[in-house]
Image (cartoon, rainbow, N blue to C red):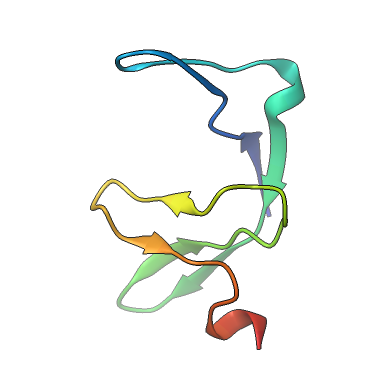
Length: 64
């Protein structure tokens, strides 16, 4: 379990405003050969944005 902040509100190029109300917790699972992978089971959160451009859509194989 990881505790941190959700993305916050986009304000300007390369600037997000993150407030106390953006506090969030989510699970991560370690896969050998892959590393730590985040999962977002919270329905009101946007899909995860990964630096590589890869996204994990909601309702993936872990939700089955």
